[in-house]
Amino acid sequence: MSLLKGKTALVTGASKGIGKAIATRYAEEGANVAFTYLSSVEKGEALEAELAAFGVKAKGYRSDASDYAASEELVNGIVEEFGSLDIIVNNAGITKDNLLMRMTEEMWDTVINVNLKSCFNTVKAAARTMMKQRAGSIINITSVVGVKGNAGQANYAASKAGIIGFTKSVALELGSRGIRSNAVAPGFIETEMTEVLDEKTVQGWRDAIPMKRGGSPDEVANLCVYLGSDISTYITGQVIHVDGGMAT
Image (cartoon, rainbow, N blue to C red; front, side, top):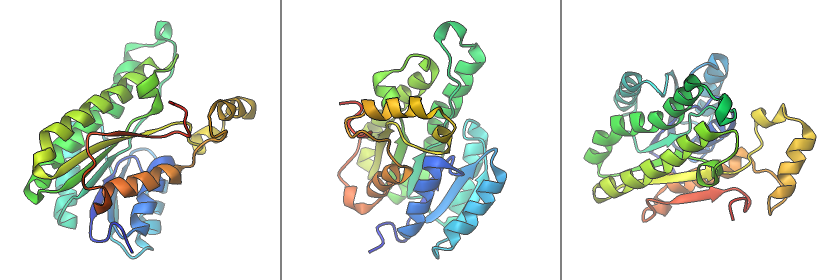
């Protein structure tokens, strides 16, 4: 059974890592997928072809998630092209890590804009469509760091904690219209970004996790399939951890 057959999903920041895994699993489960990328143009174009191979409609949009007007244009374009918008996965995110004393205003502002403001942008742009449909699932990718904090990541932690507050508020505001809003909090997920790190450091992180391993992007994507599908229709306002017990 295809869990997302007939649904249209938007996945932001989908050219690699967790975003790519979510877009791919969605296509496997029968969803038509619109996705965004910003700098990775070749990867974005390649993903469009990969998703279409599952027999669904797939389209990549080069769009800056932190730009309000661009997000409005994006959502309007998707609704026009696909006919509906049933699921939003706000995955676009960046890091600009540094200790607070060395963190510049630009490092703070950029991370807040890309990670947090982008959630406001897409949800605000799509709210009217979802309200008309009286259905929709909003999935915001936060982080274990947004719950626990992390030295050297004050900007990232603040942006991800902000996503949690935003997610819960949207759940309260839009629940009566059949729209659900949940946050997914990944822990240490092994992606292209972690491959370049020192193996000893990475092993140290693995050892500190109760399950003694990093997670895979697919393990995050599987939860997003569940939250986007009709088997989670009474779940809203939640922060669900995919972290091997890291935040326990």
